[in-house]
Image 1 (tube, rainbow, N blue to C red):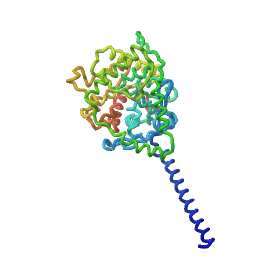
Image 2: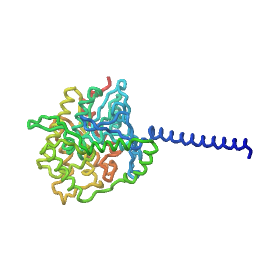
Image 3: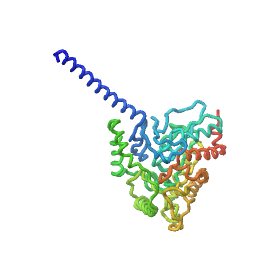
Length: 413
């Protein structure tokens, strides 16, 4: 081979190598942009907050994987969860011309990270109200996974002026909201019934947990994709819990009560690891349950008084626990072992707290019980699915349109 031929050959190899490198770089760039824009796996939408304990990250995005075998109508195996720049799920647009705004507070049942945005309770409720009242209605999703009513009260105080809603809806989760008050340690009640703000501190475990979350959400898109698929076996759903699980719930709830109500320990050690409020359902006459329910009434009263002071209608929604209304659910209470158990007690106590606080509530127990397992994610996942949120929204909309003050607040102008 002549010198010219060798030079031509080397040039050809160089060009092919350059093309290969360029193609690889372009592929990596496409993967990076695609992961960030369309498939933000391991993304984080929550951060620690000095007042609320935790709050959403404005402009954040994540993918919520769901078990394909448990998907019902309107569900998806991969749900894109987007937080607007205003901190609420969905877009950040405000002020539909001639429309009305409904602010919906609550926990993961409202945030609904397991359901596509258009199928969430908030979007369904706005659409149902719009259809029945004949005016444009915008639902503002102020749900936060892991929140208790105490955090919802603080969030309402923070966001009320900015959002300027025409109606406020607060969703109470009968499964764990009573116990949240002892775990969050945000308020205590004085003997006269006055609600007093506490100053809880975040424990080292929580600080480490959120630091690990930030670390996992970092790195290149390809790295996050590989990590996501490797962790797939760890996300396999749990169908049921051992027989002694309810005993563990009772022991944990007793310890949480003693820690906060008796010893006054203000270290917060858990934000998302909620347990079924078995003590309320099984031991209603205990002093621990009485103390937590009294504090619940005071927290709800704080919301009622704030809304009344601003002249804004407020409506509460009580969502039952799947433990109590779904016979096929993976967590069950054995009446033979716990003769004091009543499947209606949690909802009854929350509804009573609302009434005693001067509020009005919709109890979704019968509406959801009538649908059976079809409205729940299933296994040991306590959340309602897209079908459950549709059923719940329709029931709540019917009650809201029966309130004269709500109709007046939302009527077209």
